[in-house]
Length: 175
Image 1 (tube, rainbow, N blue to C red):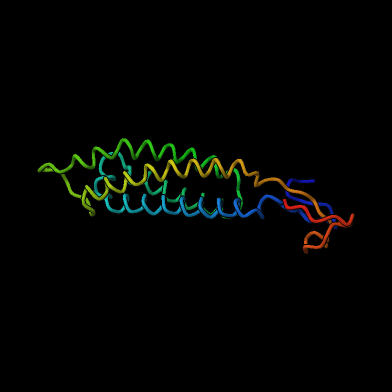
Image 2 (spheres, rainbow, N blue to C red):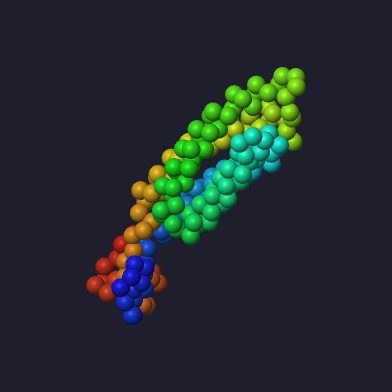
């Protein structure tokens, strides 16, 4: 039998996904991933003429935006594997942002090209991106340790599915 399939007459149940702290972690992660994508998009659009000049970094920035939106969708669909990949990309993005911040603030000299957004605004957005990535990495690791992937088979119509006591007469146990 393949992973994610159950025997006839049974249904797969993910007990850890019903816990309030797990649901909160997932929502916070989706918001952090979308906030990262939004800030990256602002930096990309605001600095497009300068980013796309020599090395074509504008395209790489757009790829990061697309990846973070994809990670948000995958986390919203309970993909535990996306957490580690998102954390790894957050480390990369943190390094890129930390290296780029000084150069955006050093662009106030005469003769340098201008971007759609002021250089100081782009630098400030990159400064905001650094702690955002640190928080994203921490929350992703918390989510990874919450065992979203654990699944059990239950008979269809199992009494505990409806809040009834288990057949042995005891009280239902929280997951």
